[in-house]
Image (cartoon, rainbow, N blue to C red; front, side, top):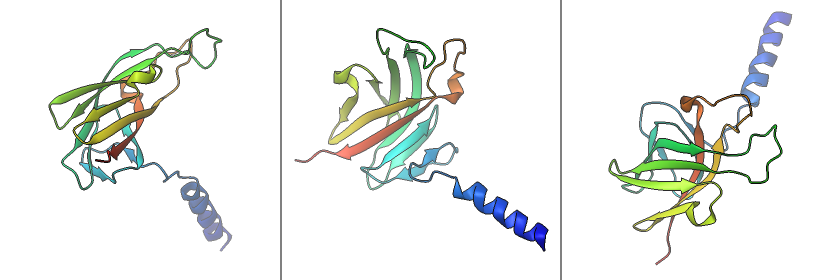
Length: 141
């Protein structure tokens, strides 16, 4: 009986620690995200914004010059990402340059909120480990 109780405790600890506030997109199936919600999109994954014709794919990260977390820098650096919208339109977003943190596509605003993982000075980030936190909002007429 003690063993069963122990397994129930382990089960609840493991699943109680999951963060479900930001959906993480990492499967090959096309997931739908509600408009206006923040979400995390992994490198080379695609999703659809619910109730719209908009699909977003995290297609490239041509630059990541962000300051490593274990170093003191004069400048914060920049992460430059490329999203593919609806399979054909590329948009460029940046973490540091204020004019490029958001982009507009028809009546939608796409905002880059975060790029993960944070860099370390002596460790290169494998491209497949990158993920971005985004938000898509409908513009008011």
